[in-house]
Length: 345
Image (cartoon, rainbow, N blue to C red):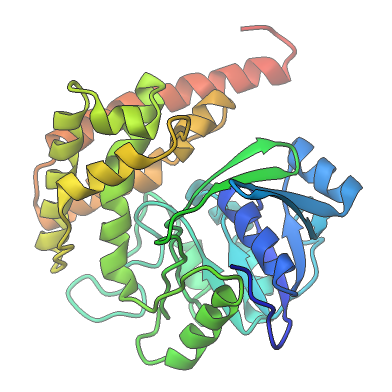
């Protein structure tokens, strides 16, 4: 159910692809003034129409949005949601910094191990830079004082056509979130209230623990799907992929525990959720491969390999898939270069 917001806000969604598009559409339908940053034909369709189409099992709704093709061109907003891929963030650090410090809340939603994981926290690794996603530490430096409220997408969405996003809804759909500064409950609650106005769940959570909860899904759905072209349901049910999925989750859990986090998940239940997805639902990494784009390998696999080394944990299955995905990403990059040069691969 979409609930009309009592106090409409100016919202900027940077990266209005599947998850960002879903969030932007629902915020607009809830009465907020929404600007989006997108690219390519998806941007062109929204810019020309002045709206984004949200498709669900109940039909299609038109959500008014204003589209921009760069962060710099977009207006300042009270709430900034960033749903870009993790690898896209470092080069946009300066532009994102300007938008973040002009906002009341800055909500990054990325897969994998985030740049902020060891920031504004205590412990032996406090302040450590996760080089896989923030190579020179510029994100941690630029956003050091921003009102950061990390969030996670527990929804299934896909861009099915330019300017059109499909959302397969479940009762558990939501955007769990929490303030990066544990004591900043006011900003966290304000961000959660904004998302709740759309009808989505937005529970306040321990964001560092939830990194591992989310990663325990991404660690098998994404790389196995990308390498085999299998849907999430296929990966969850095929006799060849199920044991590998379980092994990947066990290795991920071992790293979390070594860093002081107990995810507390039932792996079989996680596979069952994957099985229940609509048969055509693909992981975000597979969607990127099909579009010839760089994948989220560094955030989902590379950063985990980095943290495993810090924690002294062996993760052979994760390392193997990371190596395979690195080669796949290099081949995708080579194909993009040929395309730009006008040479058919």
